[in-house]
Amino acid sequence: MRAGDELPPLEIPVTRTLIVAGAIASRDYQDVHHDPELARQKGSPDIFMNILTTNGLVGRYITDHLGPRAVLRRVAIRLGAPNHPGDTMVLTGTVEAVDGDTATVRVVGTNGIGRHVTGTVTVTVPPGGAR
Image (cartoon, rainbow, N blue to C red; front, top):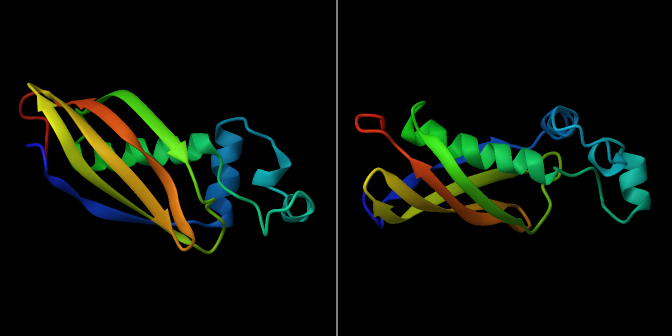
């Protein structure tokens, strides 16, 4: 792994089930994550993904590429355009820096209306741990 290396993109279909399951798994029972009518009453066209689900998907993206021995040390993300059912989020990543067995990866996730997530992930990959 070297600074400037790009990770292959990962396409994630944004389904109603993914949104609701992520909200339940993270114990986020806000109605905008599971009730379309109440989400519309609050100004959203439909339910939308919560930040904890997005955070988990960003972590998955990194470990899918770097392997099961990769250890996430820091995940710092910011949300933008919401992920609604029926869209696809495409995650991309670029290695920004490498220091020994630790790397910082810039991650961007886009959907049909813009950037859903941007951020950085600091990850340690033990020798022989990357794919």
